[in-house]
Length: 260
Image 1 (cartoon, rainbow, N blue to C red):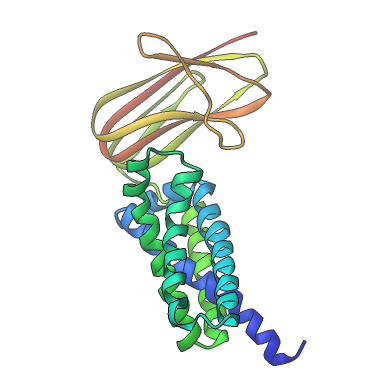
Image 2 (spheres, rainbow, N blue to C red; image 1 turned 45 degrees about the vertical axis):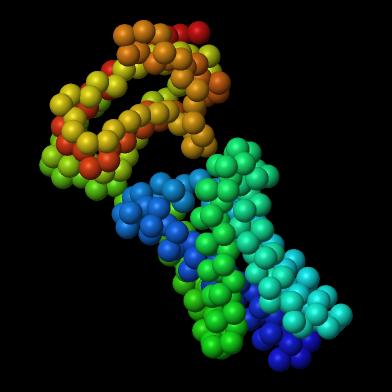
């Protein structure tokens, strides 16, 4: 492989990664309301990584192959129009195939996918024409670092945060809370954990859920009087997660462990 050929392939990949990275960052800024914690919470779902970096890039390569095929059969007049139609179809496709929404819902929400798809198409063309392969590589890597940081860095913000934990309770007061707080509890397989989350004069958005050691949501059973319960499927550390959206007030979590 010659140097020129090597640079072409590097640029081919870098352009796509840089373009999709820009689109994803702007999507996160808008969907996350320019808040780093919100953006990180959205990126916590691996589905976005799959849709943007795997599906979108792979689909664009297929469109490139279709475009090359049209070039061989001299479809110069309609090539650009067909390519745009293919990108529009690609923007809608996930909402019809994977999310299984209604036809109207897919058309409405899929419009966001179409906007992202067309922005990607325009950016890819711009970077391919205007930027050198080296700039595209730097941009692609920089955007990956930014997106990985957004995904894995905890951007929870608190003010006047005072917490106390005992063997069976956790209590915290705060003037401001935007993000999440995890309360780890070690359980053995078969043990039942029953807990309550008491929100005391909490203003703003709030919520709670339980995660297992792999970060997966644990199914909960409500057993009355605000008490939730689940049974540990394996020896592990489970986390009761309390979330706040620009909240203030106090939260008290009580729990008890029943032997199997």
